[in-house]
Structure formats: structure tokens, C-alpha cells
Length: 97
Image (tube, rainbow, N blue to C red; front, side, top):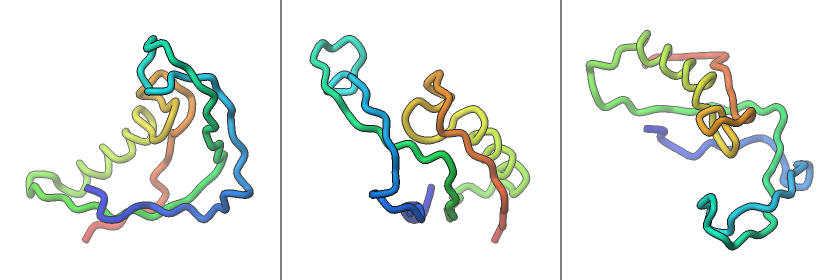
């Protein structure tokens, strides 16, 4: 579980976006479509603190899963998990407490 929201050090005024014609309810094939603006942030950096509630999850296992999630799951819209090309991340620094 991530303890707090991640806040990026970017200003909304400086963010470019994609304007896409997508389903208004987020469900493919539902019929009603609208234009929506999706932010494009080509480079970002953030710090996240996780709470691990099961002692069976050890440092090396958690780090490996976090790295794999960055490559194969990603975050945000059109991420690898959804057959997209955005949202991949790398783990640059890792601390275990």
C-alpha cells in the first residue's frame, strides 16, 4: 500500500496533453463519446513510501516486483498492462526500513 499520494514537481500550465475522442464512461463500445484531454509528462521523478503488511514479503522480493511493475504494468493511461506505450518507470533508488 502506498502511504501518501505522489506529488509530481510539474506545473499544470507547463504540461502538454493529448486530445482524444474516447467513451464518456470509460467503457469501450458503450456508445457515447467525448473529447478528453490526457496529460503527457515525458519525464518525471517521485518518491513513494509503501506499507508492507505481510512478513513473508522480504526486501529482495518486493524490490524485484516493483522493478517488474515498472516495465510490465506501468502507471496511468495507455500503460503496458493495457497494451499501451506510456507509463513505464524505473526504480532509481530503493530503501528498506
